[in-house]
Length: 347
Image (cartoon, rainbow, N blue to C red; front, side, top):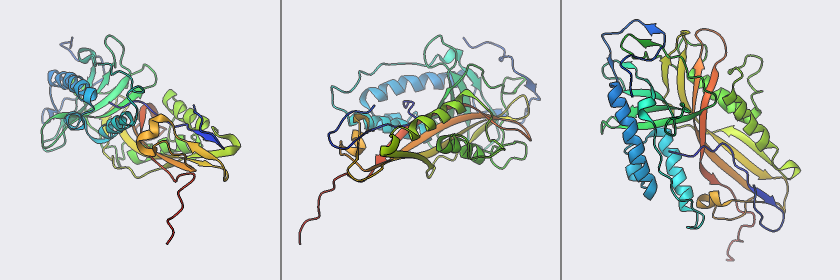
């Protein structure tokens, strides 16, 4: 599981290199919906809790040795990309710089499960509100999907919750949820592609680029993304610039569940760049140790970072803005031209 990283600050200097910066028998009290006997649940609640416990157990083993092959048996999609990048970052540190690994676990028995009924032949998945440590209230929203070939359950998305209110997902008499088509759906006010644009706008403009018709209502998660924008774009003052832009996104899968207001809880991922550039010749960006795996401690005149992010938002039916509930980003790559490239060899 990847660390939550949203933006990068590096040192900008003109000469010397300096440092910068117990499952219940009845379902939880949600609104009920008509039961759909023709559709089967993606899995049972007992199986879902077992998948969560297995994930934490295998994840600890994989993290201890930074075993990417083992990690791929329990993670997939954007989360695997984020975790594999974290392994790469750790590989770039010296032994003395690496922090001792601390085993962890989810409290699977206290997890709030959102298991949808699935049509035959459709991909099987479920969502959960999880506590990242024992005996705490849920602080993450997660999606598990069944890997089609191995038939194993893999965690594909985790997003940190900003606030304590969980989404009000509709559960039927059996305690199961209903899926919603999040892309090009006429039953939702905001589709998944617009949600991605809204998040990118939070980072790129501080939420000002969507005009009067806001994609997101005010929320703690949106405010945090805007805070990242504000702090990052001003970090160098007159000596350099930082901008956020969209990036090619490999992770287009979207997961959505019906909520009691007729809308949906939507899980989606996006990718963006942060590009830092010096303002004039003679200045340079000195990468930190966290970027050593990619930048090798070589000063640069420009650095472009790539971030993969998991997000969760509630979307109303028909009209109104969405509400961003959760997000987590991780740096997955960095590159840029050296400040003083070696001259080409003479002919």
